[in-house]
Image 1: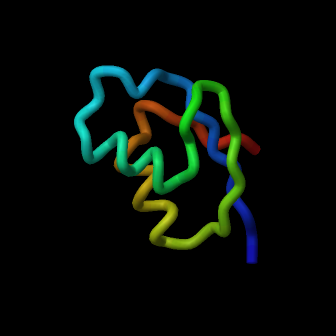
Image 2: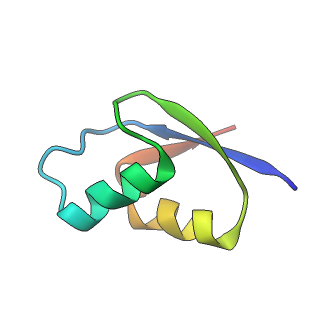
Length: 58
């Protein structure tokens, strides 16, 4: 299955608690960190929830 790379580009400071927990679930704990996940609908949903804080890296 394909993979997707996600990079945190904006700070979690000031974000609601549910968005902070979503970033934790994605494995993003610091700025500019890149993680790789399987490209599943569940991961796509997590990314959509915090799309303003992350970017998808090709």
